[in-house]
Length: 398
Image (cartoon, rainbow, N blue to C red):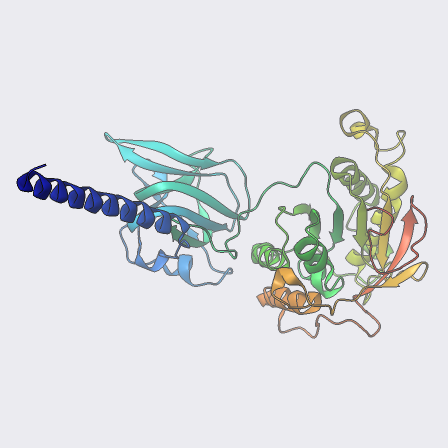
């Protein structure tokens, strides 16, 4: 090889090395971008051509924005400064959601969710200009409490991406109202859903204001619950006796509803309110009554016959009632939980209760001990025998 050829070869090697470095750098940058956390870019977006719409960004679930028709649809127009990875919509009136982009003068659906969740995250394929519409009918009005727009990247843990419950759940909590799930059951959900990774399904029977539904979702997500709850759709009434409550709620309908929930979701463990309704609330008493009555009904093919063929019968292995005096156990909500960076189940439950912002002026607090001790549960019914260790609702089931 001549000296000139050596120089040329050296230059070629340097050029190849430079190209390789550039390729590796580009790949590394792409990987870093993919691994980066998605950012909240809501404040940089335009909504319907405006810098902000207060009711969509004020953090207040009691306020909401209502759509008006534009370009042939009730919609929310969004313009973002960078590619959008998804939007989280918190509804006043939940509806299926679609994102559309304009192509050749026509609005084309590019992402859609048929789930009518009150807090709905819709992933998007890197759009910067799009509109949100009701997926079932573009003519339907949108009533939205909050919208959060996220950049592309890995979603932070606090972004609610709800899913349907599994075909069979581990634990079903029957809760009369939003906030009861932590006030009277303490660290139950943080411990079993968050720490133990049990499939937990919360059934909420009654609420009188739409914002309380959103507060419940914030609370459940804080506790580690990822299965979207069942909202049973009962109207709330303040009564102090079971008899009075059944003047408003039809007893047999309630029994049948809970029976069918047992059959549909086949829980291993059911937990429900104190038979006296804790401080005496009639709705708590009714939920507790139905939880106990439905235990036998769900296992009997001659009862609730409308679902026997479609769902079959189901004998719940273990049913616990808050403060039930027989076969009682006391859960320890004060052990540090790895899933919550060392916080205890009780501390997580208190954070969850803080999500119920509309209830903070009341006298209640998340407490174990005292007459409404949220760590005390009695085994009302069991197909696997009595508890021996008395430190785990799933004793004998694992």
